[in-house]
Amino acid sequence: MIPPPAPRMETLSPWALRPTIRAGVLHPLDTGQIPALIRPSPGGLLPTGALRAYGDACVNPGGLHLSTNALTQILEFDTTTGVLVCESGVTLRTILDRTAASGWFLPVVPGTMFSSIGGAISCDVHGKSHHMHGSFSSCVSHFELITANGETHLCSREHNTELFWATMGGLGQTGVITRAALQLVSVRSSYISMQHAKTKDLQQTLELCLSLEDDFSVCWVDSLARGKHLGKGVLMVGHHASAQEVTELSPKLEPFSAPREFHLTLPFFIPSAFTGKWTWRAFNAAYYAFEGRHPPHRLLHFRPYFFPLDGVAHWNRIYGRKGFIEYQFAVPIAAAERVCREVLERLSASGNGSFLAVLKRLGPASPGHLSFPIEGITLAIDMPAGGPDQAAILARLDSVVARAGGRIYLVKDSRMDASLIPTMYPRQREWAEIVNRHDPDGIFTSSLVRRLNLRGDLGTTRSI
Image (cartoon, rainbow, N blue to C red):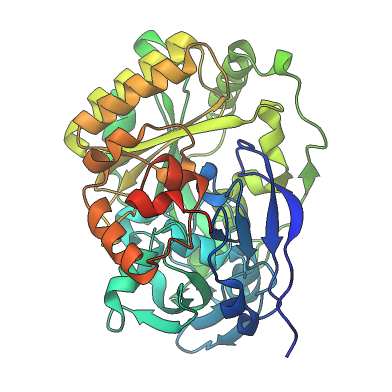
């Protein structure tokens, strides 16, 4: 048996580039090496994957990281039932490259196809289909988890149920996910039949978002619009196109064909002089006008529809070396217009915003203790870090969201105050009891877990 690897020092950062740290990383080559690597150590241990979380949930300053990036095998794929079994380091892109042309697709995908399966489970990611299919947990049949004592557990809705739901959205604190079984859905083409409509203000944006019924729904919002145009946007709804729809809308296309891909790279950080509110306002005005020229009903390949930003490598550099903040919250429908209006008014007035802001409809909440979605509306707004009065404005908005019965997305967060956790995530204490029972020595931790005290005293990870 190959001995377990020693840690090597690497530079790590979340996708939002803050914080960027130097830390030790363990790279097991197979699952058999993992139990020997799980042991108490100064600073604790954090299982990591593709580092696509935006906030500090995926970094552990002063401690170690256990990377699953070498666990990249698809172990089984049944083209009759759509059941796929893979190791946890496999990315969504690898799965879709293997399955989409065969007529099978993941029912839930986030905004990037470069997330690992282990990360998708640990974050219980959601996407444009949440109002129809829920979050990622809905397509996970079972997974294998190595806990703090080195034992492997098969977790599902029927077996080790407590661990199953504590791991879904559990931010890597229950152990190391090694493999998972996923239930895919049958599709009839690689294209999305998409309809889009421009909205004139926030009220119309929300009305259309809640009234149009289709499998996928997302609305780009001009986060810097003000006055009577506050909250204007472009709503895009769609579903997997049938072979007949492909033929009718684009007669020259084959249902499972793929257009030629154009890969771009942002090779450098954009200077801060070009990342101010006037740049973003000009871009937003151009985008809003450009979208109005598209036909209202058209076909789009699944990649640009679900993963529009993945076509530009290192797009996170567009906000400059300081990185960026994505402020994402969810609130119940009854409070959606009031809260979204206050958030947009405060951010647009202060110039904190950018070209990227999306509003989505959410369906019923997942049973995961720390899963983010609640039934209602979620709004996510990117902004360069360090904007005018940014910290104070966002702290104020956190309180607005909490009082409305909403919550901040922990996977995107790097700045929220710990005092709001019991209000936003009322099952956090129950989750902490489960996690601490399975990891009594506090082996697993992260920057976010310590900052928000998610595991109580154990979350600080004592030195040895």
